[in-house]
Amino acid sequence: MGVGVFKGASPYSDYVDFQFLVVVGICAVVFIGLLVAMVIFILKYSRKKHPHPTNIEGNLPLEVLWTVIPLGLFMYMFYMGWEGYKLTIDIPPGAHVIKATARMWQWTFEYPNGVQVDTMYVPVNAPIKVVLHSLDVNHSLYIPSFRIKKDVIPNRENVMWFKTPRIASYDIACAEYCGLRHSNMYTKVVAVDSTAFENWYKNVSMKQSKAYEPMLVAASSPIEPMRP
Image (spheres, rainbow, N blue to C red):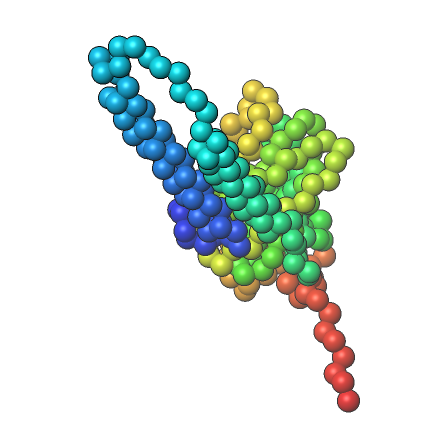
């Protein structure tokens, strides 16, 4: 199950979608402009109308224009890309930590008490910090609906984060070719409400003989003492 464009599945999915449409729009305008200019020049300066070609001198204002406009567009796209990147690395304080381990050819998700599962369960409206590790080769954790992807590299720890307001199931894929069964590395992020999440966490902790402590309470920020 996935979420389409402008559905707000993560804090930056709408931002990415909007910037994508902006870039596509710019490319479309440039393409149409070049196509129209080409047709005009073909008709206006055809050999039939100008059998004897003449040399055209440089045009400084025109040369400045076609240098400044592309540079401005490039800097705009660079700036918006940088702003989007900052959104993905600005992890909220108190985010709940889940360790994601990649190996050929599966994902394993480990929770604070040591519970390990192959499907990531998360509570809605809670920031999730995913700590990424690889046991063998390069992988890449990709959640299309959240518009996030992060490389998972051996002997190196990477971090990603997300938060989703929707109770839904989202695809997880490996976006880095990691071997013959690379296509098997599909799993899910299952977002549920806080009560359902704690019930699941308690049950899976009991099944795996792990000590259970409410994750949402344990990971929350400490309460400040009351002032007199």
